[in-house]
Length: 110
Length: 115
Image (cartoon, rainbow over all chains, first blue to last red; front, side, top):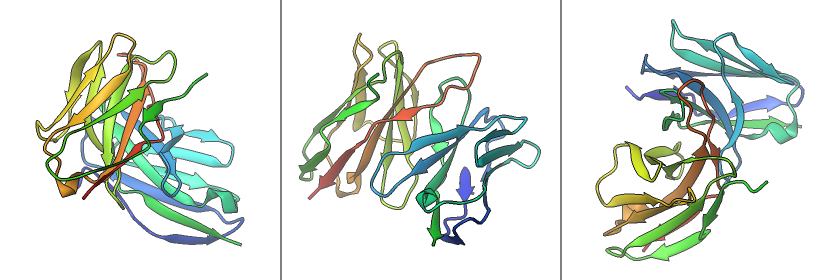
């Protein structure tokens, strides 16, 4: 079983729609959780940290479910510019090295 | 405020050669992590440096080694290159904290091709 699993997609979604991704992790000792966005042939860029209470940043909402060991990302009112690969990452805490999923490819269609 | 910078951006080597990649962390950061990202995969953690010492290591062979300098910059060295080492090598910096989860910020990466 892979340590961090994501549905690779692609998710084809019309502009303006709401889309949700899940990511499951196997290491119950994980303490830190993040969503990164990666454009084609570019570096991953931090989208948001994921906190136990859930957190929101504009159109983006992240949730953590420790009991079921998954994190989620919700994108509302999707824009063409949201097209990218979304990577979830888990770490032991502090500044520990991160374990990434393979990423979910999102395509927003006009 | 300079972000994470890496050099070179692209590199072509042949099997058996050695390579050194360089990274300067974001201003104010003290910890540097290196990742390997193969095509279609997520980044894989190689190792992390803090206070000029290797703090953590992922599942990579000893051919992969590193160094951190007093100014927090870092190098990744790979010996006896294999075709399978072709990948995007990413450096990420962060601020070590025992009390909070510090996100890592990535540089643009070095694209290494092995012929």
